[in-house]
Image 1: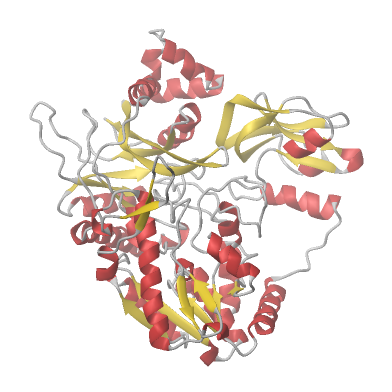
Image 2: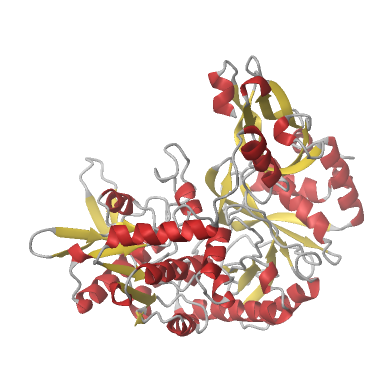
Length: 617
């Protein structure tokens, strides 16, 4: 919309107001694009720039408050939307796309999943020929469907499947992966490499005044807190282990292709040229690093699912005859539990910490704050509509809440860019009123751009929020605590019969110890767990499940009770954040600038380079 407006003579400017989340917009439903919709619709808006002057010949057909959310030139059949009709958070987005494709553009819906399956099989046969294909399986939906397609297209002896247990898997996960794939007739080589990962290292660049390239050896993984270094070590160790496996198999590199379960969202979020030449990097995916892009150019990569989204992959899996328990499995990241432990030695507290905390106090006690004029109160009012303020008044009059910053940071996506920002905690004297909490979770990141995640802290009101952290590393004890919490939560969700209602449920271990008397100077020695429910159909955007709505409150409370029984757990929290502004995971699945160690071996005539991006399909 912004590009179209500018090309035809309009202007686009970066404004002080930014929108990140689901908003109600007003539509002109006489416009062909919006025919059949209500005059008010819920849509996903995530942008920093806005249309200022509308181009000649165009009219405004949608607005979000004072911000232009849609333009149209009906005579030229040109339409622009500031919001995202392609995601599930836009309630009637499919109807908008249908209006455009069928009524305006004159397309017909005759292309089916069966057509796509046949096309994928044909492409695989033509590209691979009589060569072999190496797939490193996580056991997730994408890698399993990818392998099933390869098995349908090729002879079984052409497909080589390897699963590496990195020590960060769920309880009994590797065993269940092997058993499930064997039932499908897929023979999998399982490699237990936990010890190698825990003690793995990497080389890191050292800045030098004379700019001479220098490197240092990192700490071992079980003593590292940096999210970026954690991923580099994990990536390098995967390369080392994969190299050993390939050597044992006596593979000839000139006869081997790399197969990946790359999906369309992976390419979009990592700004791959396959999807877009100008996209902002949200996170670099393991299956779209620089080396993989180079291998694509050389024609050595097979990615039969690169034009599919997660929901389409599930449909394809069913068409291929995969069992429902595999097709509907919750996604699990390649680095596994390693990215679900927030490692830290010291708190994340920047100079904006006190001021942001004061803003949160005003929001949590808005009904009382409006009686005491304050400069920060004016900032809150400037970032909210009258309707927002009215809702805040109502919530804070009825419920005794307190909101505060937690001294840790998590990854998010704000203004279509990646952010690494604070977490806001909310606790209450009363039982949680979930609809009110969800409203606050949408409002707070919009007001405070340095917050990308909001959690509810179960238990009594938090009188003294933690300002320090419990030293936390990827040690076997820490991982064991998280593994047990993850097991208890998912076991309860499965038994409740609501696992199918939730798309994904990461369980996060944070280095936070609540309820310590500051006068006694008790050291921080416990940790807290976060339950992160996520509901989505496209796996690019989504919402947290509201207890009492998408999942029964008693199921969530049972999870909390069982997790609290685990030794060393201080509190349990519930992530209220939609995506955007918070990503599904609390840490990125792979670092933005991952230095890849190449997996190199020679066949006498030519050296081939492969990398760890085989692993996390």
